[in-house]
Length: 60
Image 1: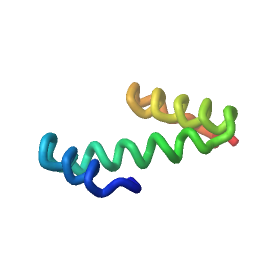
Image 2: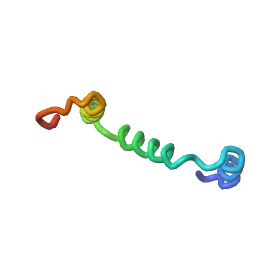
Image 3: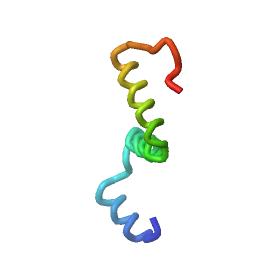
């Protein structure tokens, strides 16, 4: 943030974000940089892992 007074004011009012929140934002930023096909593959992988359906072959 370029305006340190604004950042300091926010920090005083809201406190520091949790490390999980910061990591989630980093992952979101990395996800948005992916090509649409790669995004689809990441979503599919996460869905498969959440249902324990691990694919036999890599997606790409």
